[in-house]
Image (cartoon, rainbow over all chains, first blue to last red; front, side):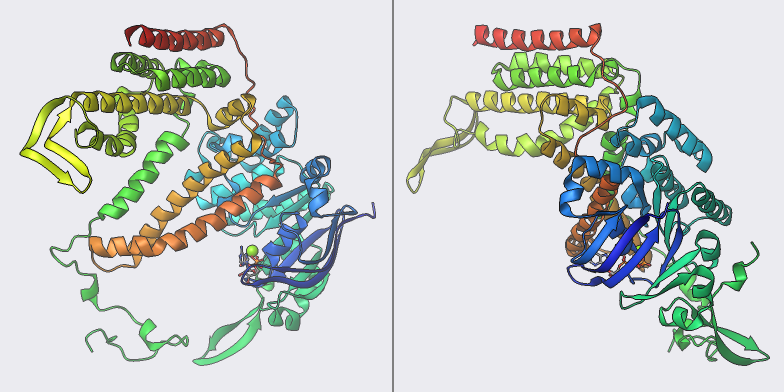
Length: 270
Length: 324
Ligand SMILES: Nc1ncnc2c1ncn2[C@@H]1O[C@H](COP(=O)(O)OP(=O)(O)OP(=O)(O)O)[C@@H](O)[C@H]1O
Ligand SMILES: [Mg+2]
């Protein structure tokens, strides 16, 4: 397939009191795994919400699977059900994503509202809980879980929909090392199974494993660069301008000096 | 300066001087007699949050194997409606008392502890009914036969164009009216609490939808539920966060001031979060139509329940007309 999953053209989005995105264009091919990089407040979450049709750009256009996302198309029941089945979004704040009264119901919510068959829903919920190792949480109310458990349930609630495209907003934040490692492998596996995975993250260390291409948003909410993940990670200047690398203070024999440091090497043991 | 770091050397990392070094040991010592106690405001907020979580948001009771839990939510909703109508029409305290007894018995059969149930219900009543009803038992507000004279003026007292009569007294009519109103509210609240406690939230919404409650209304109800929950949680969290930043106890006045000042932030925060929650629901296919995995089945006992409730409602109204 050569089709594009998303085509974003000169999109700007303004919140009431702040800019979210400013004239950003990007294309994501179907089956790609892409990392969306940027410092705090650069607009990563805003971009994912635009891709998921949850907010509409003030300027510019966004199309998913060749169809423009507009008020009209999204209000069309047929289109929106199909779109919601094809695109899954794991929010940055799991608090926002957990609203059911038990973990089981939480995971069943998506499949149920997207019109799956009763037995299929049950299979999917059980399987997803099994993959993520959260069976023991199934009757717990989601709001009583720990931060990491909440993240897993939020991820499960989207995986159960089995979307073609996964939008993941800071999925590794707050996970213990073992779970983070598991997540990285899960993303690769899902991508190998044909899914498009777009991950917003600031953790440059995981980028080589979760993405073959990286898109960088600057602090001016504009696109500051894009390219193969390896190249972007090697572009010290780009990363420094986007405030994605920082200067570490090192001390040698009482002398202090600074040099840029991007954390990439540290994680290269995979 | 007493609070100065004993070692005057600047920390090596480029931190401001005041940030480095260890604190003088005295700071950690407990100040006798200044135990920190949770304030009334904080206790109230945490209490409400905890109570709501365990009674409304938790589905513990709804998953118990009790009488009403086994019933079809639609049968329950219809029965509730019938009994609510009866409670609204009946004017005899005795019959209302009977309806109240039936409701309480149903709670017992549904494995809800009597204490828990009575507490839930009677907590609301003084607020909603008591304050409104109280004045009406006096002859000053509503004329009637005096039952208990509280104050005798000995002559007629006038307040501008109004006559207050020659005494202040509790009247028979006033007292009966108040009793009826309080009972009526008690029965209605009991019925609503009973339905809410024995039915899972998603089933309840679906049942209401089946009973032709419009989708928009269900959407509002469902978002209100999430919103209140977020609001309480955030409120409790803000108090905890403040406590961790405070040295020593706060006075009730400071607490009230903090509460007043935080309401704006709180509403803003919970609004932003509930918008995000709504977006997350939409992202997973929600369109305002309440769905639940459990299939509804109207079986023998469900029809029986609806029939029994209808019969009870009709009997109550009939008996009321006969007695009145
Ligand atoms: N609901 C909102 N209302 C107003 N402004 C907002 C809102 N959400 C985000 N913003 C602003 O829009 C800009 C982009 O925010 P966004 O959440 O997209 O950043 P981000 O790249 O995801 O940051 P982070 O790494 O911290 O998650 C920020 O300046 C932020 O303050
Ligand atoms: Mg973000």
